[in-house]
Image 1 (tube, protein in one colour):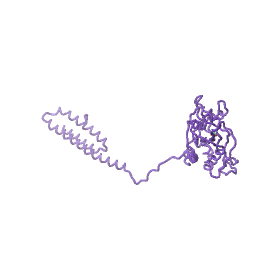
Image 2 (cartoon, protein in one colour):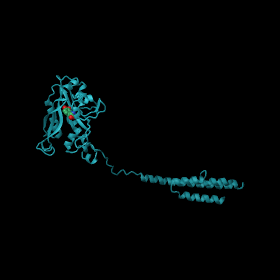
Image 3 (cartoon, rainbow, N blue to C red):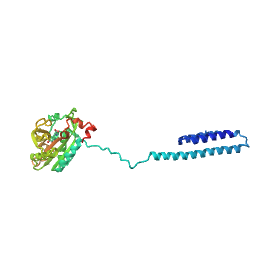
Image 4 (spheres, helix red, strand yellow):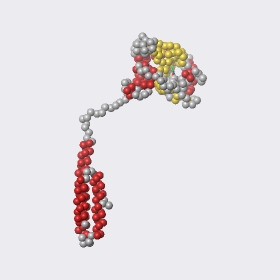
Length: 339
Ligand code: DAH
C-alpha cells in the first residue's frame, strides 16, 4: 500500500509539473483527486489495511493528497501568470500606428445633380416638396386634364395597382396636390421617382426621376417661365447657355413648349453630342391649363401659373456626357467613384 501510494504521488507530481495548460492541469486534478480519481480508489482499499496500521496509512494518504493539491496550485499560478503575459503581449496596442483610412461613399451622380438643381431653384426662392410615388389615377391623369380614354394615357405606359391607383408616371400630380392645399402663391419644385412600364435600354428604365416645377400667382406669364428657365440653364450648363422654346403639346399646360439649350459641348456649332443641331432638348413646360386650375379650385381669371418637368437622369447623362442610362443603376463602384 505504502509503495503504491508513493508511486502514485510520484507519478502525479511529475505529470503536474509537465502540464502545459490550465486545461491539462484540470484534467489531472480530476484524474487524481476527483470522485473516481486514483487517490479515491486508494482510500477505498483502506478496509483491507490492518486496523492498527490505518492511522499511519491514512496519514500517508492525506499527505499525498496535500502534496498533489499544493503542486497543482503552484503550477496553476505559474500557468496563469504565463497566460496573462501572453495575453498582454498579443493584445498590446501601438498607439503610434497610423489609423486605418475610413472608406466613405460617393454621392450618386443623380444626387449630385439633384442637389445642384435644388440649390439653383431654392436660390430663386423655390420650396422643395414631395408627393407620393403610389398615386391615385385622379392625380396622375384626371386632375391634369388627361381624362379616361385620352391618348396621353397610352403614351405613358402605366403600372396599375388597381382601377384607381397607379405608380405615378410623372411628378406632375404633385402640382395638383400643392394647388389643392389652397395656399397661394405657389413656388415649388418637386423631385421624385416615377415609373413607366418601359423595357430597359440605354435611354429607358421602368423607374427614373423627374423634377417638377410649379409657380402659381397673380400676373404670372410665359415671360416668367422663359426667364426662370434661362437662368436655370445658365447656372446649370454654363453662363453662355441659351434656351429656345419649341411649341409642343401637354394636356395640363396651354400653351405648351419643349425647351432646348445650346449644346454646352460645342457651344451651338454642332457636334456629336447635339447630333449636329447645336441644340439639346432638356424639358417640357408651359402655362398651367385653366382646366387644371379650376379642378384645384383656383380661379383662372385671377391666377395664372407656369410649370415644367425635367428628367433628372436626362440632365445627369448630359452634364457628365454619359451615353448609357443603365450605368446610373448598376452601382458599379468603378463608375460611381468618379463622381
Ligand atoms: N409630365 C411631363 C412628362 O412626364 C413633363 C412635363 C411637361 C411636366 C410639361 C410639366 C410640363 O410640368 O409643364 O412627360
